[in-house]
Structure formats: C-alpha cells, structure tokens
Length: 112
Length: 116
Image (cartoon, rainbow over all chains, first blue to last red; front, side, top):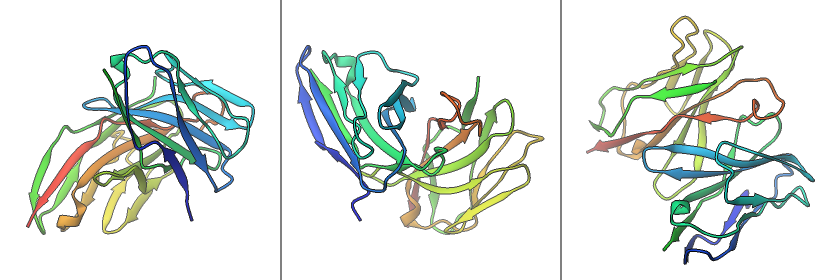
C-alpha cells in the first residue's frame, strides 16, 4: 500500500537550474495536484489534473509546468529555479470530486 | 471568491485540556467543509468532513459542526493528548465540480502543541 510517492525528499538547487519533482500514485485516482507550503501562507495550489492528458493551473502556477501522460504519474517541472521557489512541495491525489486528498510525504526544496 | 480563515497559532495546551480551533469561511453556494491534520514530517491527512448545514463530522475524538448561519466550522476535542500535537488545516470545496471550483481551498493552518 504505497499510496502517493514523492521523490526526492530533499533537493538543493542553484538559481537558474531546472529539475523535476516526481509524483506517483497507485490508487487509480483521477485527480492529482501539486501544492506548495510556506510559513504563514498555508497550502497553495500550483497545478492540478482531473485525468490523463488534462491539466490546469491553480493559484500559483508561474515558473512551474506539469504533464499527465498516465493516470499514475504527475511530475512537476521547475523551468528555471528562483529563490522564491524555496518551499515544501506536496503532491496529492483523490477520486473525483477532490475531497479526500491523499498526500505524499513532501519534497523540501531550497534554491540558493 | 471562496476563502477560509483560521485562528492563528501556535496553540499550546496541557494534556487533557479542551481544544477549540476556530474556522470561518466565505463561499458561494453550498460548500463541503473539512479538517485536515499534518503530523510532523508528514503530508496532510483528512481528519473529518461535513457536507451540509448542521452536519457534524467526527473522528478520533475530534468534532466540528457545519454552521451555515455563522459560516463556521470550529474544531473541538474534549481532552487532548500529546499525540494530538500537529498542524490543523480547515478547508472547503465549493462542491461544484468543474474547473478550479472543484479544488480544495485551505486555511493557513494552526499549530497545536500539547504538553504532558
């Protein structure tokens, strides 16, 4: 019972570097999403998907790309990392409608 | 737009004390309301939910009642334990699936510390 698996758990980047945060779920959930968690800001939605081939922007999409080629995987790409993207990133999945979200354990990203 | 406001923390209590964490919301239509909990070093997990006015959600000794007249969904527990130390998030869903309206909107979270 893996649930939602995120990798890596920790990452340090230099400004301008690119990277991909991986997210996979084995529950056959249609809905997947990425959130960032910052002190005093709570969770903010970056991008979400309601099925393979369908993605849409959330509250804070700038600087991030996503794709959903399979039901299981929903990677988040940082195109050119900036210090403002230092945060903890969570992937979550759910059956539709998105109410009971299952969260991964998070990725702590630092951009220097 | 839809929003959730939680009381600011941190909240520090002694074991067996009574807990209340306030949550109010602004929403159009008839939202569903949720409390999520985040234990140290983990992702969030659903604690309880209520889908219509006057519903009471409950789980692990925690309760919250959906009050439409006061647009509130306060979390309560009669006797907290050290193991309840965590961050608690109130959230809502507009219940209207379609576009961004189907996504959960979270409050900023309230950190609870329970001392022995």
